[in-house]
Structures are given as C-alpha cells and as structure tokens.
Amino acid sequence: MLAAARCLVHRDLLLALRRKSDVGTALLFFVIVASLFPLGVGAEPNLLRAIGPGVIWVAALLSSMLSLARLFADDHADGTLEQMLLGAAPLGVIVAAKAAAHWLVSGLPLVLIAPLLAIQYDLSASLIGVLVLSLLIGTPVLSMIGAIGAALTLGLRGGGVLLSLLVLPLYVPVLVMGAGSVDMAAAGLAPDAQLLLLGAMLIVTAVLSPWAVAAALRISIE
Amino acid sequence: MTARSLHLFWFSSPHTFFPLAGTLARVCAVAAAVLCAAGLYVGLFVAPTDAQQGEAYRIIFIHVPAAWMSMFLYVVMAFWAAMGLAFNTRLSGMMASALAPTGALFTFIALWTGSLWGKPTWGAWWVWDARLTSELILLFLYFGFMALKASIEEPRRADRASAVLAIVGVVNVPIIYYSVKWWNTLHQGASVSLTKAPSMAATMLVGMLLMALGFWAYSIAVALTRVRCSIREMRRQEER
Image (cartoon, rainbow over all chains, first blue to last red; front, side, top):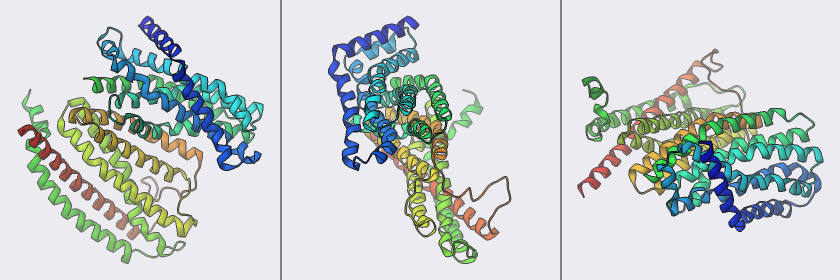
C-alpha cells in the first residue's frame, strides 16, 4: 500500500520534472499576481505591510488552483486513471499520493519563494517566518480540498472555470487562518491559535478528503 | 425485500411520488400564501415600533426567516444528497437539485434585506462582518452546486457528483462560519434563542415565526413542483 503510494509520488514528480514549464508557469503566476498589487493600490510602505500577508495568501490560493485542473486530467486522458481504479491499491491511498505529489510540485515552491515576495511587501524577518510556516501548513490543505473539485469536474466542458467556482469558497477558512496568523504576529500577539487551527484543518482534510476524492473519481469515471 | 422496507421506499419511486407531490405542493402553496399574509400583517401593523431602531427594524420579518431558511435548506439539500448516494434513489437527487435554487434565493433575500437594514442602522450597505460574509460564501456554495449540476449532461452522474459537493459543503459550512466569526464580528447576537427568554415583544416573535412557517411552506411547494418537472422530463427521455 505504502509502496504504491511511494511509487505514485515518484512517478508524478518525474512527470513534473520532465515538463518543467508547467510547474514554472504556476510559480510565475504566483509571483506576478503578488507583484501586481503594489501597482494597483500604490506603493505606500505602511499600506503594503498591512495587505502583504493577505495578498500573498490570495495569490497562493489562485496559483494552487490553476494547476488543479491537470491533477487527474492527463491520467484520465491516457487511461491510467482507469487502471488505478481497477488496481489492487486502495483508491484513497492513490488519491492521497496524487494530492501529496501535487503539493510537492505546486505548493512547496510557493512556500519557498514566499519570503522573496514578503520582502517586496516590507515584512519583518519574524513575520516572514510566520508567513512561511502558515503557508507550509496551509498549502497541503489547498491541494487536498482542490483534489475533490478536480475529481468532480473531471472531463467536463469548461472544467477550469467551474473548478474555481467549486473550490474557492471551500478555501475560505484556510485563507482566513493563514493570513490571520501573520496579522496576529504583526499586531504583536502570538500566532499560535491560528497556526494550530490550520494544523487541525490539515489533519481533518488529510483524513476525510481522500474518501471524498475517491467517491468523486468513481462517479466521474463510471 | 420485506414488506416493511417496501412500505418505506414506496414513495421513493418517482411514479408513485408524482401525484403525492402534486397534492402536497398545492396544499403548501395555499398554506404559504396564508401564513405569509398573516406574518406580514402581524409584522407590519400589529408589532410595536422598536425603541432604538424605529420602523426600520420591520425588515426583520423577512430578513431573519430568510436567513434561517437559507442555512436550513442547505442542510436539507445535503441530507437528500446523502440519501441519494446511500440508497441510489433517483428521487433524492431530484429533491436535492430542486431545493438548491430556493436556497440560493433565500440566501440572496437575506443578503439583500440585510443590506437594506444595514444602511439605516450601521450606516453602510455592506460590512465585512462574520454573518454577512458566511452568508455570502453560502450563496457561492449554492451557485457551485447548481453550476456543477448544470454542466454535467448525464443525469445520474450530475446527481451523484453534485451530491458529493453538497456533502463536502455541509461539512465546511460550520468551519467557514467559525473561521469568519473569529476573523471579524459586528453583527448583533442571535435575535431568538431557545435557551434564554426572548428579548423581543411577543407579537414580534409571532410575526417572525409565521413568516418562517410561510417560507417553509413556500420552499416545500416550489421544490415539489420542480421535482414534478424533473420527473416529467425523465419520463419524456425514457419514452424516446
């Protein structure tokens, strides 16, 4: 079971490595969206410091969503997904492995480049630490919730736009807690509560979302 | 199958449910008209003027029942969605998708009347308060459900896929509510609570309850009429 999961993560990472532009595009999107805000709202340092965490989190949400449509689409197109459904490994494990691979490819790079964007927004070093930590806990949740939407919209016309309509409202708690933790730290308070709640969301989605994704995939493929 | 379970599932067949839905829809439509008329009369003419908010508060008779219905209908919708997934009955999916537009309507009414009420009392059409925000997100959830349902042509897949989404949504609604609540709060506390004595005049409470019952009856009537339409559509497709 674990061997199947490891094998699948390895395969998805290898596929991503072979098609670097896909990974790069989502990351560039993240950087560009975050860089557009100062141009839109003005470069006043106090204002930027106030909106910085929120903007970076929203950009992370959008960027993580962009790559979701491809989560199952390629495997669906070439029939791999049907083999996975028929195979001996439990579908929940396969789905969890795919979500993990999605996070490694699209979530982790966001976490790593976020400090650079935070410097653009003039956040202090301690705030950058909180921001990176909140993104580190929060982005896997985005991948797992997003996988539900990706499975439901598999093979539909206009799936990408529909996917954002389904998934973005469900992202709200992650956004609130993620950006809230940095705001809390900026106000001089301990961000523990928000980070712990993010951690709780991570655990709950890790337990529940593979079921929902597996059910959705079975419905979409049958 | 035993006689008992046959009895339990008797009306879960679209063909036996069709006439029952027609009768119920007519009864509920009449009840809705009577209850809403009575509720509006009590609310607009009988209930006393509020000491602080004057006449402006009277929108409460539409606002609060609509907000109750908007949340309640989502739960009912998710219930039917779960029934549909568990028992594989066509009718459950039809019920769930028939409730969605009514739920979205009540959510919209709650937001709209809320902004009309907010302008004279808070001085703003919209504030980013916990309840307003979670109600807005609830509206998005309804839209997502309807959009997913509409974009899948095959009816069985549409029913089952939107059922999964409704269940995921209903798990999320409390999480969204509390996350937004901790984020920001300006809205007044709950107007009616079961645990403590009502903080409003009895006639106000009566008016609100009448309106709530009227909205219930309206929702049942409209949803059942929609279900009848989808049963007709299904028959039409079977005939082809």
